[in-house]
Amino acid sequence: MIEKSYSDRDGVIWLDGHFVPWREAREHILNQGLHYASSVFEGERAYEGRIFRSVDHTRRLLHSAKRLEMDVKFSVEQIEAAKKEVLDRSGLGSAYIRPVIWRGSQQMGISVGNADIRIGIAAWHWGNYFSDKAKGIRLTDSPWARPPANCAPVDAKAAGLYMICTLAKKRAEEAGFSDALMLDHQGNIAEATGANIFFLKDGVWHTPTPNCFLNGITRQTVIELLRRSGRVVIERTISPSELGKFTQCFITGTAAEVTPVSEIMGHSFRVGEDIMSISEAYGKVVRMPRVNFADALVSGQQIAADGPLV
Ligand code: PMP
Image 1 (cartoon, helix red, strand yellow):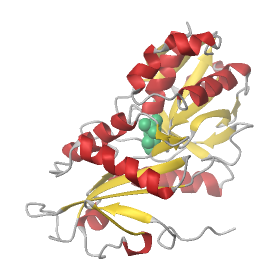
Image 2 (spheres, protein in one colour):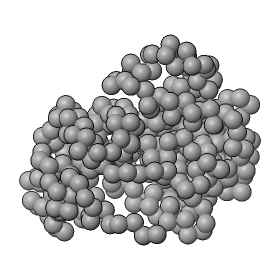
Image 3 (spheres, protein in one colour):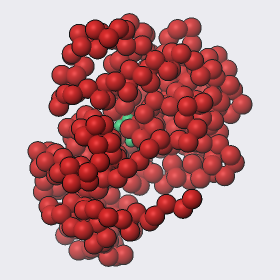
């Protein structure tokens, strides 16, 4: 089934400080965001009417903009208020929120001196990121590696960095896989095309150090949940030659949430109870009625009252 185009839907979009009808949130083809990837964005999920770790996402959005040297005229508080209103007006309890900041049409070429900085926020319903989430997804390799930190602002959620992710994902899907495992420039395991990755070996979770890719907000949440439940999580360099030694694997991301992986490049992993309980714990924490995630985590008593997290 072909989904209705994202440009042809009902609702409103927040654009440069004002609400406009969804179909009128248009942009001229001559803009620097489109031509030169002068664009940063966020991907956030709301559960039961609340955006999970909303402030952290807004801070990352402004951090990404700063890394691209964009002078954004809106503060964290203003963007927070706008996101909340976008969500409220969408009428959706569970939604995906997409803030985006880009250089507009004031200027063309690579020089950005007089560029106008645009900002928009939209919300829509987005179910499971992977259709085969429950049984575990299969990953293939990627001919594209994550660039090193001196080749791109790798800690920014910048549109330009998604060119390689899109290429890797397209190739993987065409070959019948759900996603691709991306290596870093030194040939070590980095992440999936839109999510971070974790592996289990002898009761210990291992995850690559985020030195050339996003230290995902979901990744940080899951590490915290695992450690609070007494599990050991090691952040380190992981070689693909170790794949055969791991018994379970999952990926994390706002869209992907906690998604088990059943296979990577011919290596099979068990979709075990460990992952299911992490996924459940994550599902619980994102729905906690807390405005502030820091409070939510500290409220261990509340979670612990329901039994161990994972
Ligand atoms: N890496 C990439 C390339 C991503 O697109 C995402 C999704 N934003 C992540 C990791 C995970 O980040 P988060 O958990 O903050 O959504």
